[in-house]
Length: 321
Image (cartoon, rainbow, N blue to C red; front, side, top):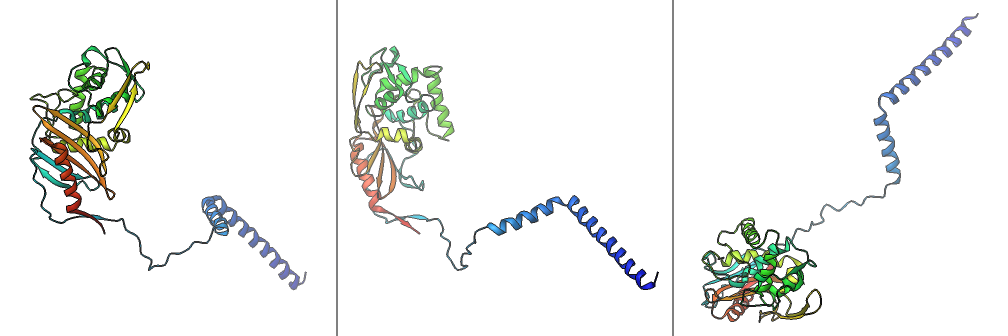
């Protein structure tokens, strides 16, 4: 065979071997690196269908959260005869006015705010409770009868509007474990809220040497209550009527808070005993800013509270930065 044909045949044979080698290497790559190939294919497919991404200009300003600063105008506050007074901005937690806020005093019926908080953890709104004999303890009342059945919701209204001691005791006596267990739970709540100047012996607010709280502690308890939408709605109710569960008796209820709905006032609870004097915890909202007030051991709780609220909104301004 001529050399010319031998060279051509050899070149074809070499090209054939080279093709086999390339195919073998490609197959080896596909076997040992399927993930890499899959990622590449996925990326290619995704890039083919993805929408165009708009690039934000580098000089565009990023909006930061608004900071509210409370400005003190240094307007002299009113004179307060009450033993303890406190005003607190609920948004920032800043105390705007204070007088003897850690002194231990008799809370009277402001106790029922803690009673409501503890009861809310255990009873459902529609749960039916029976009034036991021990519930008729005297003092302020919503007018229930022994053996009468009412929903927990109805008892809350009777306790927080009429300041019914009978409602508070009905709730406590129906608590799993009974009255002592309920009072123990109230003091457990004191610990959970990190309160240092409070201790409770009953759910209604009867005076006792071992039943006390402070303006500061009552502000913490009240703040927790008004954050609860259900309790917040109740303390903002001027008057209502509720029926016994069997619909045989109607209870007309009227809130003892005489300031309710005046100039933004939204709640929350009164309290009066001979030892405590006049107590009132208030909640007010003006110009979008909520302030909680506490006035304890006063001879004019509503007048002093109104003076405190009016001064707060004159003296402070909330400015956005």
